Length: 177
Length: 261
Image 1 (cartoon, each protein chain N blue to C red):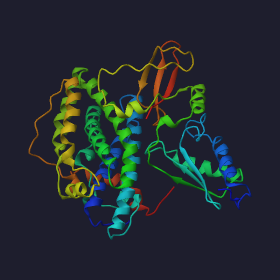
Image 2 (image 1 turned 135 degrees about the vertical axis):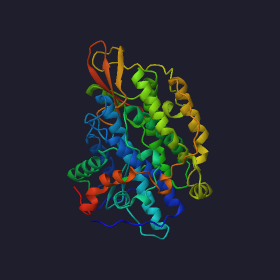
Image 3 (image 1 turned 90 degrees about the vertical axis):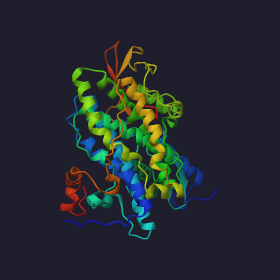
């Protein structure tokens, strides 16, 4: 399609491309070092000529940030002059941490959160209750792998809490899901 | 006061509500721990698991409300279903509504519930109802994590001090009699299996027992024998505790109809 968008007078693909760039600047409210685009929750941007549709997939069933993200996304698109826009939620396929981009992972680590490993393995193997190989994470500050998990949960549903036994600093880990 | 809504009780709506209400009422019980758990990490863990369950319940109640409309009744939203139903129209398993007890009781109940939810969500990923399948695709990952967490703690408590062991055994004695209800079929299950909406509850029994037995072996606990007693929450006939759960949960909407913030 090479139709001009009546809203902003640009070819459709330009408007969509511009929207993706804008979405790369919208921070996730709970992990502000990572944009909603890099977090992989923006699944599609569709130009309906009049309205721009942004398709989001929520991270967790009860994530309290979902509504804030919708508002932030719409505000950013509006400010960039790419509106009017609307957000739709797509729940299947379910979001996975495998969709977090390489840049998102780098930013996360620089922010002090250890990014998730591959989620696929965790979902397909039967749960081993015991005799699990202890997970070894490298401390995001000093790099030591002499670390231990303090809590399976953390400040948000998507993270667990760890500490480094070498530099003694606590840190967070984004759980693979 | 805001009046109650009545449901038609079609099989599909009941099937979805049984799951959604179990998640919602368990979430309410877990949320009671906020500020009271033995350590801060578990306070956070229980609140986080409650949050996952509320999210799952929202999706399920929303779907049940749509199905109610499609079955010839009045379409209802998640808030109407959560806040304006009377006790007899709530279809959660009795297990979920029991008072939170001590940490051993809560942890063991979480193991029983999360194992059941995990197995159910795995099957519901194949539901002919696309909306239910989408909810399941997300929820199954959350239930797995809840089950793992509860299993770790059951072993720690049962294999811990004399005190933690005694409390875990007391919790098992109090809770076990409420588990058979999770696997007792009726016409609602038969209809769901026929239409492809979801599995019969009895289809989950063996896998549930195997998972729980694996944890119990590690914990040094024995699977008790099943008693003749049957709880009946999923048929709307609840324990004496249910009214208090709803009184607290529904009070605001009943006293200030339509109130929002």
